[in-house]
Image (tube, rainbow, N blue to C red; front, side, top):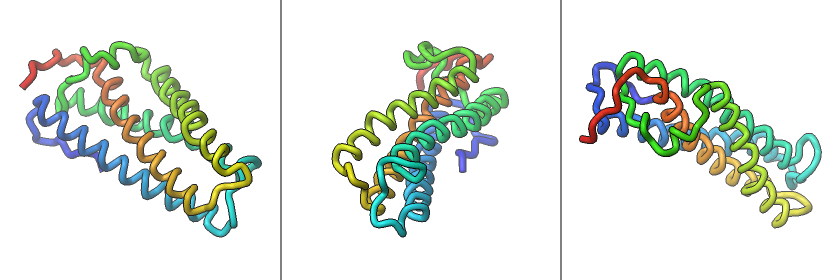
Length: 176
């Protein structure tokens, strides 16, 4: 699923292309998986209630925290490995965002997960609750959840690449 960088010279252009491919693949995969999963869970219902164990607030909050936690853990490992193997160059070492992320990878992963939880609560759950206080139609919920999971996963890829390059032994490359 992730860009194959074996045998590819490690230039900033190749690294950006590999990351772009990973962002697109993660977005599409999580969009389809999130929407499909939501439809399988809630498609038979007349509406998805906001509260309760099968409510959309609990579902979105849990997913908003767990997806970045899992993706962050996996992606940071993958990108760290690629930096060690010099399959990717450390293009984000001096990046504005990278310098503001926690240096400790575990803390950074938890920070990404908390961001996912808070952004899901404020940007998705609250508007859905305001628009559909009695329950969201399952098709609308599946579409919104799929789009949101795709977006969160794309952001997780971008943040994971930055976190993985923070402690890279490679010098920051010159722009090409």
